[in-house]
Image (cartoon, rainbow, N blue to C red; front, side, top):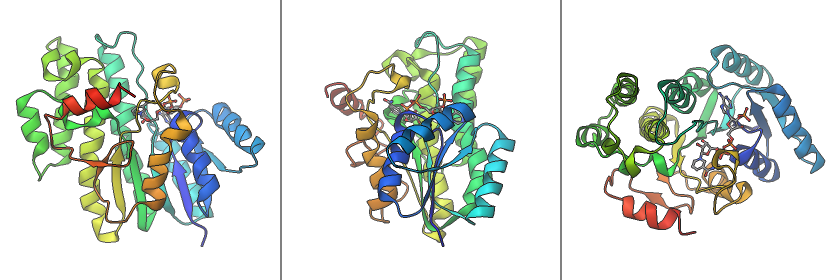
Length: 288
Ligand SMILES: NC(=O)c1ccc[n+]([C@@H]2O[C@H](COP(=O)([O-])OP(=O)(O)OC[C@H]3O[C@@H](n4cnc5c(N)ncnc54)[C@H](OP(=O)(O)O)[C@@H]3O)[C@@H](O)[C@H]2O)c1
């Protein structure tokens, strides 16, 4: 049986470097996927020039038909998936302090709601003992939320998907109605929709882990660091290859006992529920 690894949004950035690292270290087929065929094939050509040969498939994580086509192709050729890295995301906005409803919705649809499409179509293919990694962010830690009601509700150990979706929709409604309050989030609510989406990704990770625990599938989320990619317009203290080291560790090397964890870029498991942890994020993230 050939083992299979899949990385979403892997035509560039951290996803591309994760595919590169998997091709160097993982004994199996590695899928580079992209929403745009041309960009995906150009990325494959770059790897080919290095003597690395990924499988390629178009995959737009927000498009059910695209995800279904990918699912059918993998199932037919390989029968299952062993490693799945949910990496695809955007942070597109004209002004990080004033996101429009459309910008907020687009960020939340791609970064968070897409995970339900992936879960529906691809998780049934993930084999027992497999590993799923959701790329979150430092903005995906609970300390980004300052609204007491939501801190309490999201901290509930019996959290449900409805709770998370209510949180996300509460934010979208606030942006739409003009009632968005910056004080509900850290750092004056800058990039609020991205924070909401990534907090939701982290919280969903813990629920997905509970659902897949019985098959010994690990589902973790992580912050890759501030990384010099197109998303940050080249700002960061790590390059994409360096930032891929922790995702690679989590899907290839980490003990299987790491389950349902929020992992920092230096491989440390952090307490996601420590909602007062902002001092840590400020001092660590921007000083390196
Ligand atoms: N860079 C950082 O400092 C940083 C920090 C914290 C977390 N992260 C997270 O790390 C991950 C990778 O980010 P990055 O910095 O490598 O960003 P990036 O260079 O902008 O790459 C993002 C990738 O996602 C793809 N994508 C966007 N929408 C998609 C969709 N609907 N379907 C499939 N693919 C889609 C993009 O494809 P296109 O080329 O077609 O746009 C691109 O390949 C993201 O989850 C991001 O939120 C990054």
